[in-house]
Amino acid sequence: MAGERRQAPFAVVVVAAGRGERLGGPLRKAWIDVGGRPLWWHAACPFRDLPGCTGAVLVLHPGDLEAVAAEPARTWMAEAGLGRAVPGGASRQASVLAGVRATDPGARDVLVHDAARPLVARQRIEALLAALEGREAAFLAHRVPATVQEVGETGEVVETLDRRWLRMAATPQGGRRRRLLKLLERADRERVAVTDEAALLAWGGLAPLAVDDDPRNLKVTTMEDLQMARSLLAPADLRVGQGYDIHRLEAGGPLRLGGLDVPGEVHASGHSDADCLLHALADALLGAAGLPDIGERFPDSDPAFAGADSARLLGEVLEDLAGRSLRPLQVDASVLLERPRLGDLKARMRARVAELLALPVERVSIKARSHEGLDAVGRGAAVAAHCTVLLAGPGPATA
Ligand code: MG
Image 1: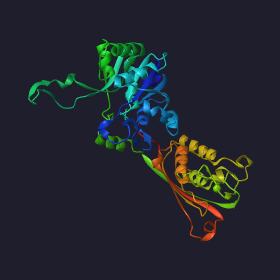
Image 2: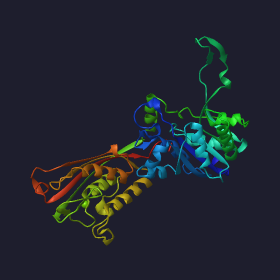
Image 3: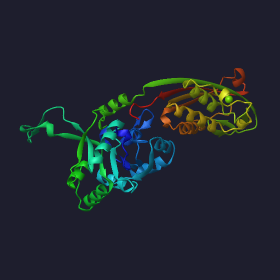
Image 4: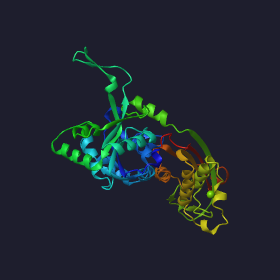
């Protein structure tokens, strides 16, 4: 069995430096949101924690390096088991060279995988690694399901090819790190362009072995592919949660709200930092997970939570959820507050909450409204928040 075999050390390179022009839009292909995570995250996750893996390198467009050094992408890197990010080159081949160079020299093999393939099955990666026990190079490939005709310039059949001997190369592809690196460097020097590593390894005389792949391992190239990938990666179950909190307001600012200090004349009173938006959010998350509410989880009677930063309490809740394979997908919140007016702070609060949840900012909404002079909130004596969250669990089928 594959699991009992002693795995030779191998490294992973996920290539995400392409422009993806065929998909249009301002975003680079590898950054397209699929279920709250970029495409590269989905491509990397199936390699995470595989026995023998010495580390995974993400190759990005140089313009994207800043983004992965900041949240939420830094968290996404860690979730996907990506140890470092390096800048790619002008071509795929140059990017692969940069990635392979950045891998652990102690790895015997390197697997190169396209970020545009978010659906590779872990079991197929294991089959590829098993093939590398007997060969120096191998790649995942699809058999050709229909007859292939070679045609001339005007479309007339020149030759009917025997599809038994045809394969469509997929990724991952790879082989011995030292051989692959030397070939990439030689191709670079000699200006030899190949379209993938299997072609390169074949050029180097290694006769890479085609290992049958699962047809689900599609390459996202067109909008239709993206729709297909999204439907295949759609979470198996969705959980919704709702939270509410209210705190008394007292004289003297600032007001802690949504993980920020809101300047003004008042602050909220309470046991922790009294951040009612983060409390409503934590309760919504706990509710969606079917866990006890924050009153039980972080009791007022416990001095450990006196003056506590609610962002830290939220972090604990998120860790609990992650341990249960539950991941926030979306948040919608309303803050009820008479004064101070949030104004520009609303956008900063939205960014802060997105950062705390490791979500793209587009998946977080924070609305603010006054209570028209009615009740305690309306009189300016209290601040309240409502929050609704959507969780995914137990995560993408391939992750
Ligand atoms: Mg509270």
